[in-house]
Each structure stands twice: as C-alpha cells, then as structure tokens.
Image 1 (tube, one colour):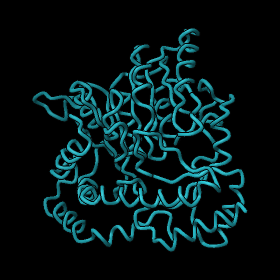
Image 2 (spheres, rainbow, N blue to C red):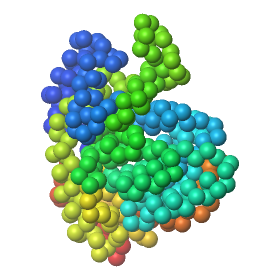
Image 3 (tube, rainbow, N blue to C red):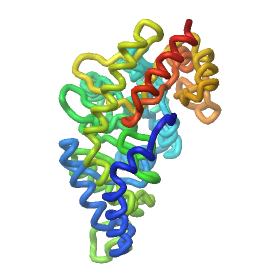
Image 4 (cartoon, helix red, strand yellow):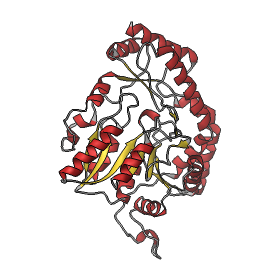
Length: 374
C-alpha cells in the first residue's frame, strides 16, 4: 500500500506522457518552450483567471508574489501558524517579519477572528509596517477568502492566496487560484496535480502584477530591445521547466476524474470514521481537493503503531508548528501560545487518499483505525 500511488497514475497516462516528453526532446527548447505557454493557457481556462505565470516551484511562486509587492525589511506579513514552512519562509527570506495567527479548530485554516485581533495589535504597536496576509488553503480546503479579503481591504493590506495544497478545490463555486489579490500553487509530485520534479504557478487578474512576476521569474528582465539582458528589477530563476509543463498538461486532462475519486474516498472515510475520530469539516459552499485526508485523535500514536505493524502508510502534517521552530524565533508570535495549532500538532494524522486507492486497502485502513482507537 502506498501513501501516494504515482505508479498507478503513470500507467494510466504513460503513452501521453512519453509522447509529450519526446516532443520536447525533439525541439529541445528546455527553458520556456512552447509547452510552458500552452500549460499556462490551460491553467487560465481551468481556474477562470486572467493571468497565469508558471514557476519553478510553489515556494518560488510565493516568493515572487511577495516580491511583486516589494516586501522587504520593516514589513510585516501575516500567516497562519499551522502550515508548511514555505509559507512563512519566503517572508523571512525577503527580510520581512512573519506575524503568526492561530487557526480555526474545525477547518485548520486561519482563524478570521484572531486575524482581526492581530492586525489591531500590530498596527497599535507601530513597530512594523503591516503590509499583507498569506491565506493558506490547508490540506486542500480553501480558507474563508471573502472574510479575509474584506478584512484586508479594510486595513489596506494585500492578500496572497496560498493554494499550494488546494489546486482544484472550490469556494463558493469558484476555483482555487482566483482568490486574493494574487494566488500561488505547487505542482510538487505528491500534490493533487503534480509534476515529476518541482513546479508551481502564480495567478492574478491584475495585469501589472502579472507583468512584474513574469519579469521577476527571469532575473528581472525588461521588455526593451535587449530582451533578457535588460534587467529592470532584481529577480530570480523561477521558470517552470518545459518538460514539467508537458507532463502537467497530460495530467491535467485526467485531473477532474481524479478529484472525483478523491471525493468518493473522503466520503467513505467520513462515513466509517466519523464516530471514531474527528474527521475533516467541510463547510457549506466549500469543496476540498483532498490533498491529504487528515483525522484527529488523542490516540494518534496508537493508530500509527498499529499502522506500522500492518504495513499501512501515514503522515503527520505538521508535528512541530512553525511558531515553535527555531527559524522563526524572531517572528511575531514565535515561541508564544497558539493553543489550537499546538493541539492540532499533537493530534493530526493523514491517511492515504490518492485516486488509485483500492477499496480493500481503504477498508483495511479504516479497520486499523477502529482497532487502534478501541
């Protein structure tokens, strides 16, 4: 049994992927080849957004989004305390200060009530120029984007929607990628839509932001007669490889089918485990992409031990929350109490939920949870 079964997926689309790779090997435009532009157009159509700039990774996508807003020393960027390190890491890389906010116990996403309190506290202190918010869609479930955006607008802040785990998810009938002033995602191999290396994308309806991000991803290139050798700003090497774009285009064709299969598996987990452990909450108007299926239990260690004895894979996202990490000791909220995040870190456990999980294997997982909980 596998936590993510890339073999089964590859067997389904092997012919298409090999043909796509061969086309790139023939034309040899390995950097920003035609497949990159095609994939960006496909992403625009899928998400319903005006501009897509593909990126070398989800982390680069986040970094470029903040760079487009000129984030730097003296600035404060709000982020949830319960998320992958990349969300807060890019803030620190630019010399800005991460401002942690605790999360909602039911959804694991940013607690909007705590968000408002945090903004008032930081603005009252006047030591930081509070500039923006990174709203994370954790485990595939979109954050409460309407409320977050309304709070941001009220206080003159921009919003980056971190959809690294939620590509394909929906919030009020809109796809992840259209929320915030600018949005990002990841195509890491284990993500719902994953490539065979690193990859990501930036989404926005703002032409100016799109132009800046496009410049940043290629060393800050300009549009003058000297092309890439005219540098109008400091940038990075943030380009998506042509080979990865070709692979992703193939996978995007079966992506909705895979999302449907993930939903079926999630429904079975909920039905079978809802009275045994705490299962994920999906509010009305939301649709998760089920990047992972994360339960909560005070008997997590018992469950993991039982899984290990029976050859069942699992994962803990995240065992040590960011506000407890040495790298963020100077962040606002670093080392302080984030009671919900601290509790979740002790209780969460992610189960296999890939589209190719066999029914017998899922029932084995369910039986093991029930036995371990007792």
